[in-house]
Image 1 (tube, rainbow, N blue to C red):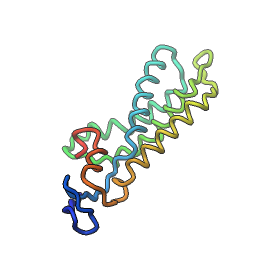
Image 2 (cartoon, one colour; image 1 turned 45 degrees about the horizontal axis):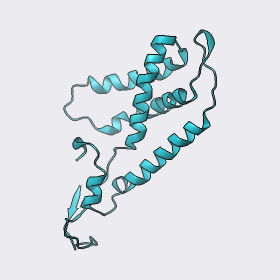
Image 3 (tube, helix red, strand yellow; image 1 turned 30 degrees about the horizontal axis):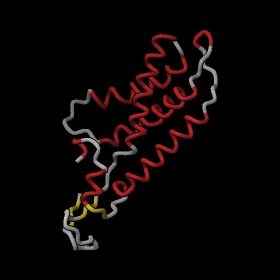
Image 4 (cartoon, rainbow, N blue to C red; image 1 turned 135 degrees about the vertical axis):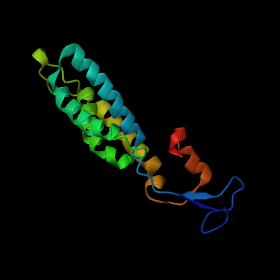
Length: 153
């Protein structure tokens, strides 16, 4: 992160502080959260109803996540978790279409409205976070507005 004083190097002079330029590999947090929630809900559905369509996603997430967690390193970078994204998105799509079938078989559902809402939320989240991904010079107040959790700073 680079902090630039107010009125320097293209940063407008403002009384509330300078500007910040940073590159973050955070990704779109709302997609991560929705995918994680769908993973938990999908696990509950799998336990209750024995839907086999969730097994591949579970194996993908667990096989990617467990080595990352048990590595014992003090510092683990978020880009190591990128392999989880496809499985979480598949999980999210399975939960959205709610592949209900008999005897544990999964069927195709159609819930286009929910899918459109998820895509809109994810794109809006990406556009909101884009200055952090592209090293744009933004006011410090704008940067702090994008730090939703205390550990992100």
